[in-house]
Image (cartoon, rainbow, N blue to C red; front, top):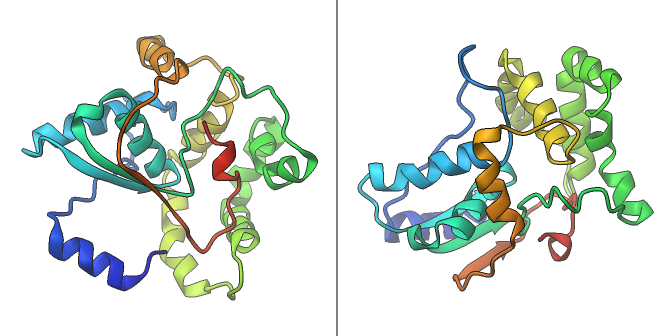
Length: 214
């Protein structure tokens, strides 16, 4: 998604660590995809790795983790790079409708909040992911080989549960984890932070315009 020269320059200049928050969950672990869990863990990873402060870089769900850490633990962040904008969920404001064109782009948000959507994602996960990938592409053909590299992740046994919870909890349609309520309360306060940050362009259509992010 990013120019290769940029990535090479980053790798040469900084010590780069990729932190994967998408690992398979065991049955003993809550299948929550609420904002705080992986973001709270990410705030703990940096000191565990011996990194006092880090540049946080991510896209989509990974970008959300970086945004939350930067918002709540700014002392751990030297800067923030978020692909597609600042994308922390505004759960309290989620009932406010967007314009018709934006609602159309977010069709799958609402589909996943219905029993039909759960069944559809369970039975047609690759077809849905492929369709969304194609809809988001701009100015270039669909790369089937690249899609197939990602497709095995859809077979994770927790995939449907995690995805469905993510889209339901962000609209307040299911209860969040009570142990994370304090973190959600702090996020809802929208405390401003003075932190170097950059929104990066990418080759996908933005589902939500960065200016609409909170």
